[in-house]
Image: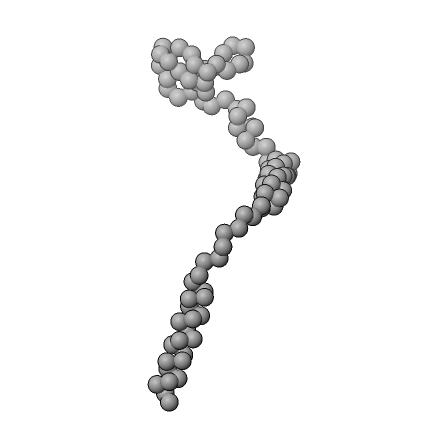
Length: 98
């Protein structure tokens, strides 16, 4: 009796496994109607988040740091120097000076 039960259970399990492993037929699916609005919506959300972050900026210290002149380290009077160390008489800044 137990032997028959084991054989029947094994047979049922084999049938269920075979049915589960048989691949479905391939079918063409057009998901483009979902992909394009999702991509456009994602871009809109990213643009809105960046706009909100820029609009809510209270601390303008980045602009102040860019406006301040950095003190010139002990650079030789002659030679190639870069923008922070190039002070001109008319209060402008050059990218490279010598």
